[in-house]
Image (cartoon, rainbow, N blue to C red; front, side, top):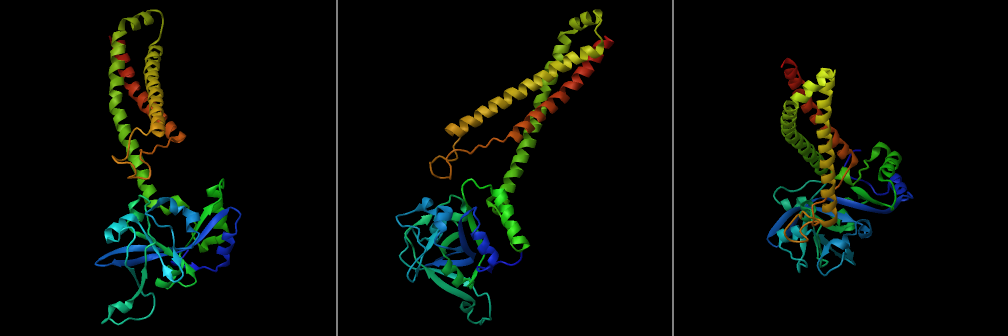
Length: 342
């Protein structure tokens, strides 16, 4: 895939729109521009969308204000701002004056003595509403407007920068993505919502990895308790060891007894710890014990989100067992040899 835009009339894209798995398809034109309101300005992403954008995203559910989600009426072009962007520009929910948008000319030459000729200028009015995704990237940097306005200011007539899809309920996203990619070939990129937010999810995966490594080190330190308690147990059972030897028990059999004891301690600790962890996860999912903020509504969800994955449970269990069993091996081997010499 090359280039920033594509023809809106590409037959391949028309085929994608007609796929039985596609519920809503919206053409979009998005690029950066300069927004100016009175004496304040900000670099923004202007995103032009079709009238069915609300069916795609249900943006009406996250509007703030008394207005509706409108993109245009007659000759008027509306702009729906993110709530933080409106605060930065000082527009308020329903601004009374025009919001001016400047975008650089894509083609041609301009007079250096008059830099204003290097920009395309247009204006938006308020529909009386702002959107609030509760993610700074969007609330502070986006203006949603009509596809017509975006094409005009970015000189993208007959072009789009993306085709956004909502799949029908029950559709396997991975299979649908593969089907669309096969249909389009290498000409276009097909990205799901996670791939579109790749940086965010990569950071989350790195945080998860570091948390696992950090907790594993804590577990290794905690295993010194097992080493100490097992050493004390072996010393305490010195007379019992002598009795077992007199009854014909070999040293290797005695070592296996203590190894089994230590490994049972590790296994029991792993099972109890995982059970308590799952209980805490269930309590958090059900009752939201840990809140994200002091005031309700500051985030998309008020309680810290929890997601339990079977592969994580298996990884934790195997890690505890491995570290625990390795910590058991040395004291049993050392103390049993010492008892043998004694």
